[in-house]
Image 1 (cartoon, rainbow, N blue to C red):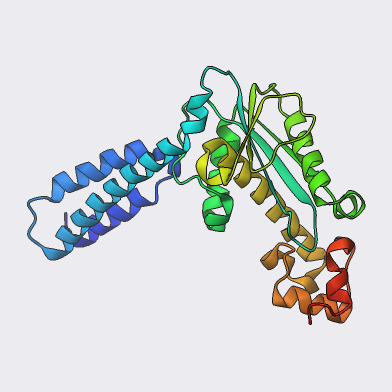
Image 2 (image 1 turned 90 degrees about the vertical axis):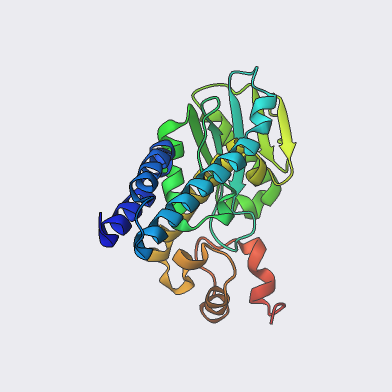
Length: 265
């Protein structure tokens, strides 16, 4: 094959879906085999990139294997559920929680804390999680509930709602950083759990994508606040809009009083 064909073949392999990682490795090894005796620099460069891609896949699978350590600790239990929330800190919009039960020993390369992923990667991983999960549930609490009851109680209520929407009853909950009161299910609180547990990371992504889509929809209703960019967090444009035109219906009044009264000027 010529240089262009080799580059195109490599690019096509690298663009394959996340879950095609085993096939991707096979095709990369075939590409290396077919180009190993070629002396042209362009083809040699393709082979080197293919070798690096294989090493990257292997490294990623090793990382994912470590992220499954908590799941393996409770592998005698049938349903292991990861729980996480998104939206504790924004000035507007709801807090959203997700509960996800993945199949046993189900590896999802590139899964991670949702904050560490690009929007494109989150969307791709969201589809993989939804399509393959044993069960998932989503819960939320509005800005009005947050104003009335506080962020932490609202967080707990959203988590309970997400767990309650599962079609299976979890045997153990792996929860990011908190313990849910009065849940009646064995739970394990894991600090930075969305980076350490594949189940919590999955819940983090489902919650994040769900909330981001909602805030993008709100942005069409309230374009002045740039919600599709800041997702309700206090960006410069969002703060300026708050100070000049005031809050809209989805702002958390308990979060913005200092801004409105000039305490952050």
